[in-house]
Amino acid sequence: MVCSFRKCLENPDLFTITYELVPGRSTRLRQFQKIIKFAEEATKDGRLHGLTITENAGGHPALSPAVLGREILKLGLEPVLHFTCKDKNRNQIESTLFARDREGLHNLLVMTGDFPLYGFMGRAKPVFDLDAVHLLQLITEMEKGIELPPEAPGGGVKLPPMPFFKGCVVTPFKKFEAELMPQYYKLHRKIKAGAHFVITQVGFDARKFHELLLYMREEKLNVPLIGSVFITDVRMARIFHKGIIPGIEITAEYLAQIEEEARQEKDTYRAALIRAAKLVAILRGMGYDGVHISGGKVRYEDIAFLLDKAEEFYPRWKDFLPEFRNAPEGTFYLYSKDPETGLNLPERYEKLSPAQKKPLMFTLNLWVHDLFFEPGKGFYNFAVKYAQKIDGSSFEPWFTKFEYAVKGLLFDCQRCGDCTLGEMAYLCPQSGCAKNLLNGPCGGSKDGYCEVDSSKKCHYVKVYERLKAIGKRHLLKEGFIPPRDWGLSGRSSWLNFYLGRDHHRHPVPKNFQEPK
Image (cartoon, rainbow, N blue to C red; front, side, top):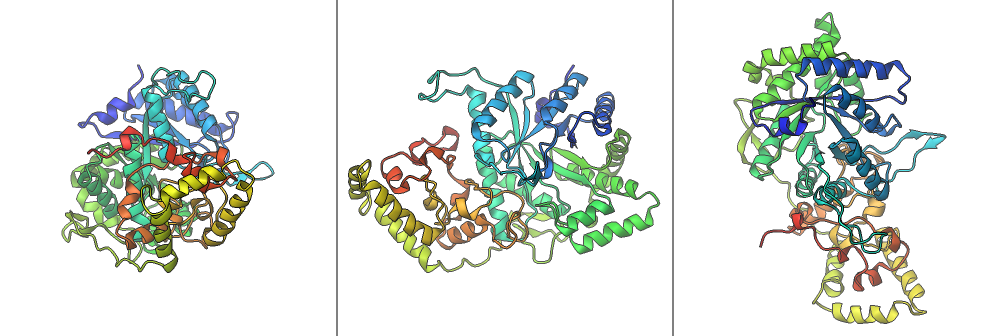
């Protein structure tokens, strides 16, 4: 009988344990057979409550997670499929979700996804038509029974509900306030969009793990929290230290600690397993609802050894806290340090940096926005009437050219026709974010800079700094920005705004509406 991953995770008396599988490019390779053998042994052992399966991990093409997921489901263990936004547009995403429902593969881990890298005869085109918040909201609508849009064939028909169980990812492992807080604020949006559980990014700092736990409790983000535990041998530690994998960092001091452990231990891989077991014990002791183990060799006897050790270490988990201090000097923490444990005190001690002065251009942008783009204020009503006269007239092409000449100069406008400058502190996400994300940052930034272009500051770091300057940083955790409407591309975004054609035409989803 198939174990229900959902029931395991929702049981407060059970510490849920999953392991991540990374399929290769083919079922004809020995690696695939190793994975199947691992799943068979995991099923017999019974201590793993699910096996997660990556989707084109690292931006590289690989076997679809559904293929392996079906095999695991037959064995009697529930798979949790990674579901990313990087390779599929919204129509293909919806089509894939229909297929997952038919196949009984309802457990999903939703994330933005790594920027695509190597592919056939060159780098693949990144898609990112939806972001993780959009995708979670789409799945939530499908869980309720999605209604087809009226203009589509069969429009107005409501489809039967689909029982998905979806989670999201968050990273507390960021150095600066302006890099960390947008991560937490986006988590609010993800949970409002329907995330049933949360898994952390890979990290090695116990105090940061604890910070996220305290934040979710304080903000009443009441969904199960799972901590990521990576089996880190010396080779992987060096890769993390070099920053090759976006969003995962190891300091020079922590690398030296791992290298020293390896020198003292004859079996260096065994040392990595023991270190991972200690972190499992720590996360369980802190109060996490489970752990997500990844990395290492695909041999179940190693995971069994790790779990045995974790059980042995659990009663004295606090003894191992000094071994998990992996934060660069100057790292921002949301809570003050507990001098006894090295973790955090429960009271918020938010040492926020002073708000920067508003840039002059941003000040002018806000003034113009209030004058022309705020309903009921200034010249808004006049602008609506003016837009009605221009729309469809011979003057419209010239008006559009004028708009984009101005916005191109001021904002590096990409002529999307569905402008979100007003929600983004007048910074364009189509030109400023490599993944064009609309509801918060991805997890790949390093020291405040973009994972794709390390010469550019992360778009959401800049948005946070501007919103903080006007006392509105909280806006990053409120509301929902719908996905870009590609049917408006190249058309005047001003006309689309005033005539109700852009993203503002969509009602705010009920789960995002603030209680009155």
